[in-house]
Length: 362
Image (cartoon, rainbow, N blue to C red; front, side, top):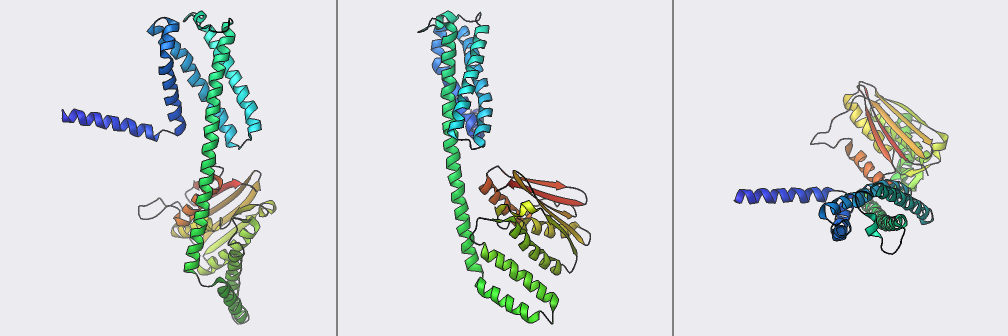
């Protein structure tokens, strides 16, 4: 007896778990139409004259409504994803509801032999107009509920993303203040050392100059959410100069950027995590020298960044995060900033790995 009770509890728990994992739309859709079927079933029994007839009536009425609203959901979801204004949404919703009402009325008239339409006449003598008016009104109510809830939920998510971005920005600033020396003092010191070593050690002078320029870029844009891609790219060249010196020449670099892409505004430090990831993990699997390739281009409405390296893909292990912490943080930032309007694609070949990022052009 205890075993049977335990199995029942387990079965009930699995159903609740499955329900909780359903997207919010499907929970509303299934629960809403199920409630409508239950609430209107006594009326359908009266209209059809029998329970089997009421079941058939529910299948035709509510089943077709359920199917039509799924098609309407696909249209509305695409419309709302593009941040369309209400003045453009209203005509679309009106047209979709009228079209769906006509389709459903036609279906009911085709099925007139299954249940007596005459019993459904309440206020209007025209059966066709009565059906069309009733079903269109139901679909309009469904549309208003969906669009209203969707817009409200998207607005709340947008506010949450902005709050998270602001919180992360403040947290990063606090960590930077705790961990670093006075950046202006460090920049001035590097400039002094670079000037002193320019004649005697030109290679060291070049490295110090690259470091100073990268630090200048970081200081200039430390409070900016978006920076010109051209400045981001130029600062990265200084970073790559230092990386090439650190690897003692075992790094071959091929970098290009389109003129139009230089004008685009992008999140700061978006290229460096990609390059760091390629150098770090490419060095473990690539023959010497490591081949690094960077391409930045603009094809409206997107900016495309591609970083590829020689070597092969390293599968994720429990003790390490695939792609490194920097790449993981970059993915989180892009999700917060662009909310599904970006793409990150990873291409794995036997002798190379490529990471592509697509973000909206601004």
